[in-house]
Structures are given as C-alpha cells and as structure tokens.
Amino acid sequence: MIIYHLGGTYTLNGDEYVEKVEYATENIARFIGRARKFKVKVEGDTYTQIGIDYPFTEVWKRAN
Image (spheres, rainbow, N blue to C red):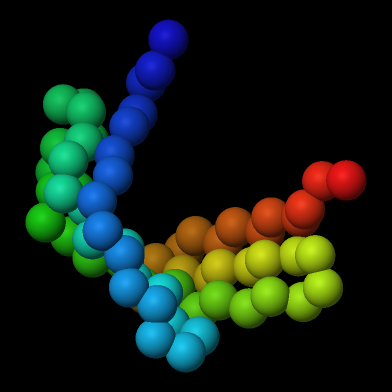
C-alpha cells in the first residue's frame, strides 16, 4: 500500500539541489508548488543531502 507519493522537477547547481513538487497523493497535496533546498555531497560511494531550512537529511550508499 502506498501512503505518500510525490514527484516533480529538480535542479542541481554546484552543491545546491532543489526539488519542486508538481504532483502528490491527496494526503500530502499541500506540498504541490513548494520547493525544498538541500546541500549535497558525494564522498566515495556515499551521497548525502542535507535540508536547508528543512529538517531532513538523507544518506545513500551504493550497494555492491
């Protein structure tokens, strides 16, 4: 069962990554039209994005 789903466009300029929400499930439709900014970095096989004015951080590691 899918509880939340959203998507849209993004831009990457240097280490600044910006997501713009263009569609979402009804329960989070309030995010449509909003942009979220992150600082990103890649170190070896690890990608990190840290929210700017948004308390959200993701860390991804490449699987072998």
